[in-house]
Image 1 (cartoon, rainbow, N blue to C red):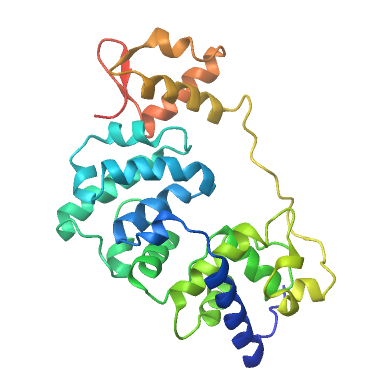
Image 2 (tube, helix red, strand yellow):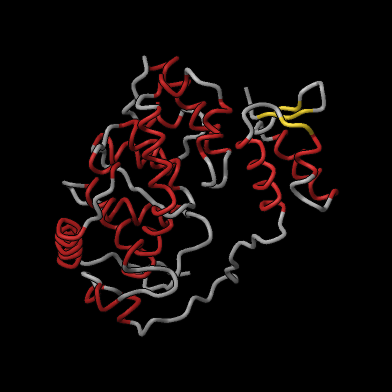
Length: 297
């Protein structure tokens, strides 16, 4: 696919000014923005992966109250992190956050590191999370590319309805080229906010968009996405739902649970055993010698 020509300097300056001004006036008052400590930002970024803000807020508030520092979390078992994760989904994130907290204590004296290299070396921290923590916690000039930001750039700059399925080098180059010289961290938050609230996947609110007059997708007449078919993730009856049921039994129990309690949680024995084996392999469940199971200890 042919890359679009870079935005003219005047348009890029307008894009920065209009979007940053809109964000200054309308940004949501979120706790990890109010308290932008490096640990608070890291916790929020782990939780917000593939999870909407509304579901994250209550779990986040309880989490940072209980574990206000990496050392506080590292002092507890991984199982307690999984239990506190609740129904956020993708509970391996809880294990990874616990592992990251432990590494921060061991390698950095309990302080979240500021360098991108050190962040990337932490367990469970990939390119996106490292860039987000660097940007939002330390004011780093990093391209922060989550799903919402990628969709905004695809539409406004590339004139396409959706970005590719996975991040490409062309997207990274584009995002880096769009960074303002100053306030790059606010730009990152503003583009994320625009994608989350206005330039949404299914029902974009172009009438409320602060940069609608600069949007190449709108100017082109909203051409439809012509890439591979985009399918939503199924839930009902899937292994993911089964895993969730088993995890709920373990989270709600004060200690190890008998195999019979897990058997009662899901009727399909073949699927249940496959899901349980997967949870054990992922380190989310510990099988004990007396045919009971527990969260990781």
